[in-house]
Length: 267
Ligand SMILES: NC(=O)c1ccc[n+]([C@@H]2O[C@H](COP(=O)([O-])OP(=O)(O)OC[C@H]3O[C@@H](n4cnc5c(N)ncnc54)[C@H](OP(=O)(O)O)[C@@H]3O)[C@@H](O)[C@H]2O)c1
Image (cartoon, rainbow, N blue to C red; front, side, top):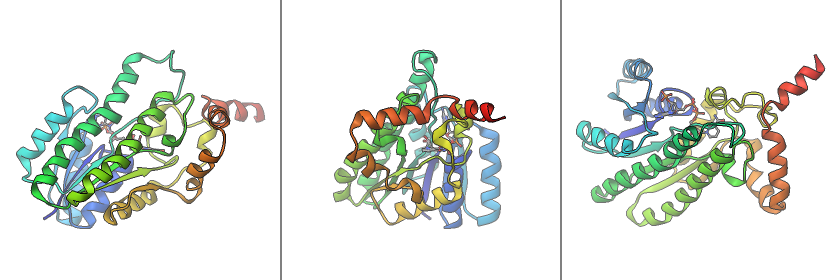
């Protein structure tokens, strides 16, 4: 039975991807920090779909985490056919006013762990000639600079650039790399990022739709996919407009609490 590893599977897009994979008969290895949540999800998926589901609770934002996860995975499973690098978080706010440790944690989780997991598992897939699949979750934030999301946006640009390059390097080995760029999606992400009320988030895509689009793209071995019809023109618009103009519009849209201020004025 084919096996998939999903990081950040305890909520949001990762959880929905785990549900879709289970429905399609994949055995799963789910990773996040919240052990109790993961165990409950695993039990439900096993009961509903009769697949094997193991969980590994781990903080992936610290040095050495990817290696420890890879070790734990290879101890439990002889092979992973699908790697989904989904775990990540963002923070909306002033770069200088938020703790440096938070930015370091974010860079490690969103970029370093994702890169290291890709390294370990892509090399395994190559050695086994298994025609594996890697899905990396980037964001529409990857296409331009993102004032008030400066570090987060840069981490997602890294994920997009890395994934698009790796796709070409791994293609001769039969391994596909799919980069998913969601727009604002209804998950706990925005509560954690403190970005629920910014102007940019005037509408949210359904997480089930985003996950299904991502899964279909990965199965079809597509390259870069932007989820949500409304988000699709973004890269082209951004490419045509002057970079400074794009950055100034992004700045206004992501300014902390703009929506809250507008709502307050109208009440
Ligand atoms: N929602 C959006 O609008 C949106 C848009 C574009 C891109 N994305 C990207 O989509 C991905 C999934 O986000 P989401 O929207 O589904 O948010 P979410 O519901 O907050 O899910 C994030 C997942 O990552 C896990 N995680 C966070 N920190 C971790 C850590 N230190 N170690 C291990 N796991 C950790 C969380 O589990 P625990 O807390 O249990 O560890 C959770 O399972 C992220 O990469 C995000 O950047 C989201």
